[in-house]
Every structure is written in structure tokens, then in C-alpha cells.
Length: 303
Length: 297
Image 1: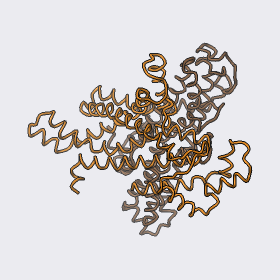
Image 2 (image 1 turned 90 degrees about the horizontal axis):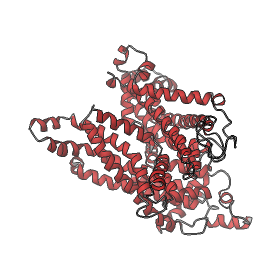
Image 3 (image 1 turned 180 degrees about the horizontal axis):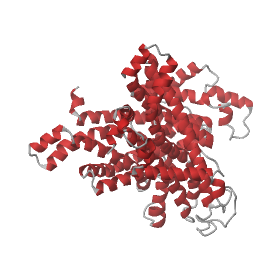
Image 4 (image 1 turned 60 degrees about the vertical axis):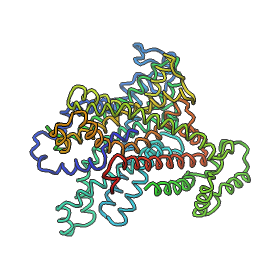
């Protein structure tokens, strides 16, 4: 499963721990330059930029509405009017791919948003409260984690019923245990640092300790996890849509388009190439960008 | 940990049906025509859904200990029979895929670590980054198109000894990339350890060092990850079984979700978890065998 691409909680926590080391202060270039200045960061950033552009300007870029049938013949080969050909209903494939980027980015953002917010809440609470609260929260996360994300997502869809919205929620929920574990181990590192103890001794309140000290310090780790998480969320949601458990026709969702094209494997094999490639390139983009951000935050990896 | 997981699964599976928005009995039978309210009430009673939830759970546990998982909504077959009939297919698929992933990923990762920084290393790692990004369902369709449709070497779909190759390669190739990356970083870690330098200083032959020192120590983290990998294979099997019409529990689960067949979904979740937990316990034993530090403690 795609979640393998994410860092383990421990290494992610370590890299966050090191960002506060003095090495960061002598780094000359601004952070975003260090990210985009690497090969990975440049390629990943470019892919993500093109995606956002395509999603924002879909109405201008796409020559046809995504669900409009018979704008060309059925199973049309790529030609000037239809750069990627037409599908089984005579819809323009290029337009559908462009509009699909909107769905893909929305899925990634919402699913990761759910995992991130819930994961932060669980992880921070566990690390801050300690004691039995920590035991219960982290044990449950461990148990949920061992269920694997696929099983949790399937169970959620089974409960909520198949739809695009429910698929996003399912993928988001499935990611919570991993985000919670990562956030917890990153927060534990902060809690044990002298500045935190000093704050406690100075009489800082709960809200100040959690939101002013813990949250900003675990945030860099979580940004890496979330960026890499976008790619696994997109993969998982596309898989659900491919199975018919996510987006429903006529949504131009890439996974759904693939399962439509699979029925015409013999007749129009080219219909499968672009939706699959779009998913792969998107996932690659977020993975490369996440890797670049992680390297830029980890002083040991800097040349 | 394993027992805790199975216990949590039984609770989750009992609660599952109550989390469904609306009336689960009505939803389950929405696709069958001519069900009267009296019949629905009788079904609710036979499923025990009219009882207090704690009682339902205990009842469920009691039946579980007798190997009774209830009956499917469609066709009224024993859930345990349906699951047991398909589970071996899924396990066979997952094990074959894991073997393929290890057979490809391990040598790749080892070679990349040995010639670290070389062109080969860079090439293999680019390949593995790409491999992680490729969706398994797309890879599966492409392999099907090439080997089954165009070349006609392998059957397109179905369940049989030759049919396992395409789905197993689909799953295996997707995960070989991950195995390769893990192996590479683990081996690189080991190669920079003091005991390897000592072995070199002793003048041991290069092959001896690689096999007895580096490979053996480097394999430990890889083997621990295999349990998780197996769980991912089981999860990935859900998608791949549906592409290739492989008659396993994953395909059964997706059909059950479409048909709102909750007893069957419960059976799927339970069997999936039991298999995953069992395999991770098995691998812990293997882990102890190759790592004497654990065996002695």
C-alpha cells in the first residue's frame, strides 16, 4: 500500500527534532529555495504546480464540458480536436482528465485534512496528558494501525455507503492512526526539552503549552507527513473509485475512468493509458515534494 | 498485541452495523422485493438486532466460539463457509506476491546498497520511486493488456494455477519497490557498522563479509517489515482480485459492500484480521531465529 512511502514516525520525529539545531540558523538560503532547489523538489513542485493550475483553470483549459457526451465519435483516436481521443460515450478524454485534477486535489486535501486534524488532536493530547489517556489513545492507534488502512477504508465505506464524499471520509479516517502516532512521537521529543519544562515551571497554561509550544514545533514533521500523505490518500481514493466504491459516474474521477476503460480493454486500450499515468504522475509529484521538504528540514542531509 | 487486535475487531464488527445511517435491516433488504414490515421485524430478531448491544456482543462472541458467523443476506449461506472457501485463494495470492516482491526487491536493494552512489544505485532508486507511484490497478490492467490480450500467454481472468501469475505479479511488483528501498537503507546502515570494518580488517573475503555479516544483520529490519508488507498485500489483494476476477475474500468483500450484506462484511473483516495477526506472530518467530539477540532474551 502507498502509505509505505511515508516516513516512519520515529525518523520523522528525529528530523523535526533536528530542525531546531543551530545548523538551521547558518543556512543561507530561504527554506522554499532549499526545497525547490533540489532535483526532487523542482520536479515535484512543478508537477504539483501544474496540477493546481489545471484544477483552478479547468474551465478555460478543457475544450469541452467533462460530462458532455458525443462531442466526438465513440472510441475516437487522438486527433487535433480531441488530443487524447474520446471515450465510450464520445466524451473528450482530455477535458475529463483536466477536470479530474480538481477531484483528485479535493480528495487529497480533504482526506489529508481529516487525518491531519484528528491525528494532531490525538497525538498532542496523548503526549501532553500522558498517563492513562496516553496509554488508551496510543494503544488504540496501534490496534487501528495494524488493521491496515485498506481495511479501515473498506469498513467505513461499508458503513457509509459508496460515494465520492464517503470515500474521502473513509480514506481520511483510515489515515488517522499513522498521523496520530507520528504526531505523538514528535510531541514527546518536545515535551522532554528544557524550554518546555521551563514553560511549565513558569506557570504557562494548558492552552499556551499546547498551542504556542507543542503545535508549532510538531508542525514541520506533520507538514512532511501530510505532503507524502496526499499521495497515498489520492492512491487509496482512486482505488476505491476504481472498485466502484468511491466516485460514481459520470464524475471524471481518474480511478473511475480507468475502471470504465477496463471494460473496453480489447477495443480501446489507449483509454487506459492517460488516467493511470495521471494518477502515477500526481502521486510521484507529491512524493518527490514531500521528500524534498523532509531533506530540507533535516540538517544532516544538507550538502 | 495480536490478541488485543482480534478482540478490538470483534467489538468493531459488532458495532459496525449500528453505525450505518438509517435502518440497517431496511438497507440490507432494500434490494429484495416484497419484504413486509413483519418479515423485516422477524429478520431483525433473527439477527439479534432488537437486543441490547452488550447482549448482542456476547451473543456474537458465543457464536464465534462455535465457529458460527451467521448467514449471508443473499443466498442464506453460512458466512464461515463462504469465507473459508475463498480465504485460501487470497492467502495464496498474497504469499505468491510477497515472494515475488522479495525476490525482486531484495537483490535490487542489496545491489543498490553495495554499489551505493553509482549509476546503478541511482537507476534502481528512480525505478523504485516510480514503482511506488504506480497504482496497482493500473499496473494490473497494463499487464493484462500486454500478457493476456496482446500476447495471449496468460489467461485474462479467473481462478487457477496459471491465473495466479498476473495478479501476483501486479501486487508483487508494486511492493518490490518498497522492499528494495527498505533493503537498501538497512544494508547501508549495516555496512557502516564497526563489526563490518573489523571483519574487513581481519582480512575476511569480501563474499564472507557480505553474506555472514552484512546480509544477516541487514535482513533483520527487512523481515520485521514483512509482516506489514503481508498486511498490505492482503489489502492490495482487494483491488487486484477484482481486476482479475480472482475468487478471493477481497472480491467477495466488494460484492458484499455493494449488496449491503453486513454479515458477510463482518466475516471478511474478521478473517482478514485473523490472518494478518497470525502471519505477524509467525514472522516474529522467524525474526527470533535470525536475530540471536532476541532469541536469547
